[in-house]
Amino acid sequence: MHDMKTFYIKTYGCQMNVHESQKIHKLLESEGYIQAESEDKTDIIIFNTCTVRNTAEEKITSHIGNAHKEKRDGRNLILAIVGCLSQRDGVSKSLMKKFPQLDIILGTHNISEIGAAIENASRKQKTIEIVKERKLNPRFDNLTAPDDPTKPNTHYINITYGCDNYCTYCIVPYVRGRVVNREITEIESEFIKLFNSIKDREESQIIYLLGQNVNSYICPKTNKNFIGLLEQLSGYIKNSNSKLNFLSSHPKDFSRELADFIASAPEIERNIHLPIQNGCDKILKLMNRGYTVEDYKSKINYLRKVCPDVKITTDIICGFPGESEDDFADTINMVRDIKFNAAFIFPYSRRSGTAADKMSNQIDHKTKKARTTELIKIQREISNQITLGE
Ligand code: 5AD
Ligand code: SF4
Image (cartoon, rainbow, N blue to C red; front, side, top):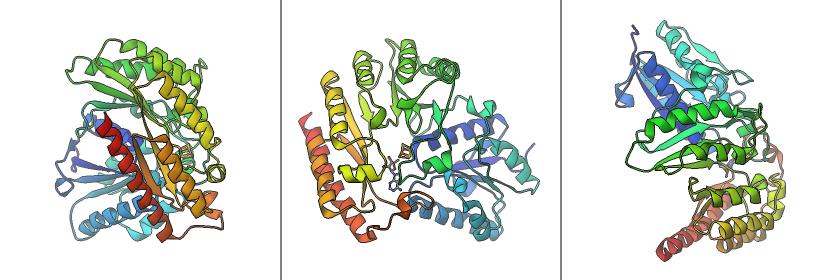
């Protein structure tokens, strides 16, 4: 039996992290641990972290600080930091310096070792380990995760890990590594297992296929591409109340064939998240995105033509280095022109080690914030108009 037996996971960031936290949850439960009601009433706190923007990092660091203070003041607590923030170069060292009582630091590639690390921690042994390559661990990777209690009808399956695109602002390729595609048979068996466990529910269910850039998926064994994968999986859920979706797609790989396939397959949910990132061609080029605003527009115009009930959402970054007032006006015009159903709009955040961080013409904090606020306001009006018109 463990001495320390309740755990609480605090998750930050994207669906990939939410999903990995669900797997940690399942793994620990299978080893006899019990989920605690709150972080105040638990033996173990696991922070599953994000590093995509500096604001996320600051929030997480302050939360870790609070828990660390309690431990220092005598609370019997195992503290674990896992995921993207710990994986970022130099962070595990600085965390240990700041918070010497941390018991566990694991990155993205060895997150599956959390069970053993907790065992060590209950014997007062620290596990501070960051590795450069993903350690495949079928016991963890092939777990069918439990439902997220806050969204019990939403389910996730990983199809790829990592990203090779190196958009110049983005830290993800550095903390999640090179692309690794899972084999289609593995995805398929996880999918069937999941579908069997939810198919009799009354509410409609949604299964997301996850990856940093799902539409560049290619099965390492069979060479089947993303459309082939969708075709195969949607076959299982025909005439059921489950739908399939995916996060996130990259516009450069969003083909007409994919749009045609979505149009032909009612099993695919009509909400497509397609991050454009900016509305100015000069900035898109500096971001290394591999498409122009016109390319993007022609792709979604086609998708809207073949699939008229589709809702399109996006991500936009304001204040990328070198973005002039005129460039920003291009983004405003693009947003007014495309009329997204919703957009997630953030100020550009410098990430050390990325190409954009080394660019000389950084925009000051105030301007970045002001542009973000202005664009959010414009998009809110558009989203409201669309909702009213429905
Ligand atoms: N600054 C601001 N936003 C960023 N994103 C990624 N990196 C950064 C950054 N350095 C945004 C992108 C991406 C979303 C997940 O986070 O818009 O699509
Ligand atoms: Fe980051 Fe670009 Fe990869 Fe998305 S596609 S994770 S924005 S590098």
